[in-house]
Length: 68
Image (cartoon, rainbow, N blue to C red):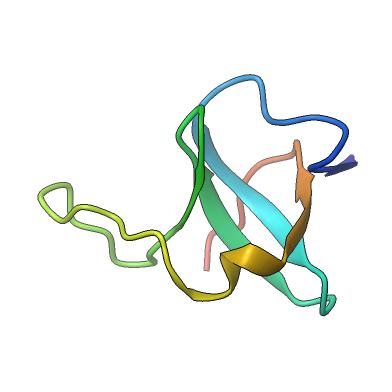
């Protein structure tokens, strides 16, 4: 189910499908405090960076993350 970020945030840290204001669907990681962009080829040693179009984040989905 889609949730608006103004109404609720995910209960647990993890990767979630998100929708931007533009309608585009992406994948982002919720740390428990902030959203960070999920990388497709993420290495554990590489720290994720907060950047890109996440300022447009509007909705998040409580289902499983997309596996592209």
